[in-house]
Length: 226
Ligand SMILES: Nc1ncnc2c1ncn2[C@@H]1O[C@H](COP(=O)(O)OP(=O)(O)OP(=O)(O)O)[C@@H](O)[C@H]1O
Image (cartoon, rainbow, N blue to C red):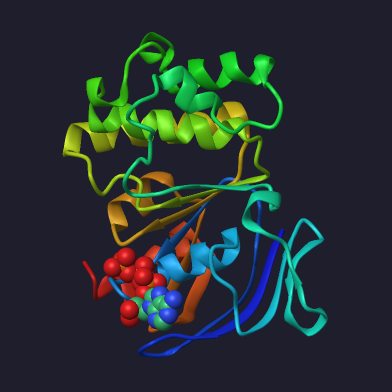
């Protein structure tokens, strides 16, 4: 379970999120541009600090402002994949995958490389990869840190339609074969329909609704989007 109870003053509104999210399958964070989706992701992964509140992952406290507790991003057991795959251009894929790993993950390496189908790319430089391939390498690198939770912040935005479809299939494989819980930020209802088990809707920095995908898709709020 990821238990989030946080408040943070942003430029245009108070960000306020109070919800326990199941760490299983894919949870979509859905909202219009500027609603606070990336803020939530960056509060969870430790890139930004809340003004007040607590965040607990599987009963481990990551943030507790009352007790001045703040676990740094690299110690949270949480990996993030961003919209633009951040790869080192001067390193081959294999070095990008292994960069900064505290211990070699030989047995998981093969599994992750196979699920993402990036074995044939290991000796290429990022400039020799398509956008979808780069994003698969970025996901591989995130998984090789052996996270308890994977955050994806609009990972398909920079891809064309065929590549989006392809990557959606790979994300499905991750959940079924690697069994990693994913929190997936998007403003695209089709991605929610195809991927998510449950959905949190954010509006103006507040949790508007949370529930299983089928129920949320029937809500009046989303009917007005369609
Ligand atoms: N560190 C910060 N301090 C103050 N305000 C911020 C900070 N980060 C973001 N904001 C503001 O908070 C609001 C929410 O931004 P955020 O990036 O979380 O939205 P978003 O839903 O991810 O948007 P998009 O879909 O366009 O990426 C925006 O108005 C933004 O300008």
